[in-house]
Length: 230
Image (cartoon, rainbow, N blue to C red; front, top):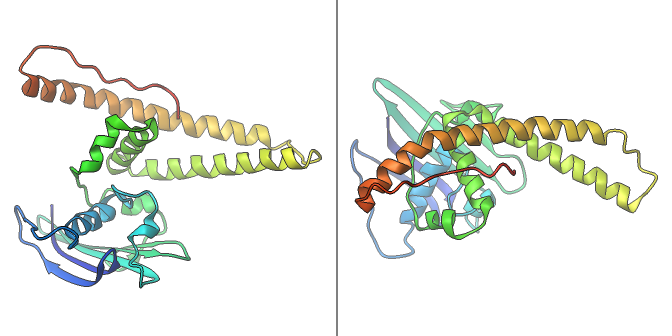
């Protein structure tokens, strides 16, 4: 699988861009601030529907635009696919495969798989646990696209539960009879996410040991564990 073309409009510093790519290695070079990383970020977004630099997708929109579009032509053996994302500042984002809008993000995720290495990767060990959870969840959505829907449902239920508790704090007469329902859904969805993260960790452990041993040149054992807390 490889990306044969990339078109951008209103994306980061690009008002318009149309570039053709050859199969094999492609090298972008130029002065700092010209937008090299933005090209990689656009491809990564079409793979994960997320940015490796900023969790707020509105940051991808050019300051002079109300929306950004990223379109990539994908070639996989004898099959050609056209992936497109429309990132909007004031309405839901839209995603298309061969011109057909996808109702669920899980139908879009997993079509294009990508791996990115960036300076921000150091945040996995330097910063908060939330960065490590985000890394695991982005990896999961590529391996199991349905997990994007599970994560979205979890965040929706959490938001509704917290809104109910906030209302009860300000207005004691608020009916809390639905709190048990939100709690039950939160536990069920959270358990699915935790189990998926744990499974991914188990798959990563032997790879981590292999790469660590090759780099360190020793038989020292390195471990990878998940603290069960969303």
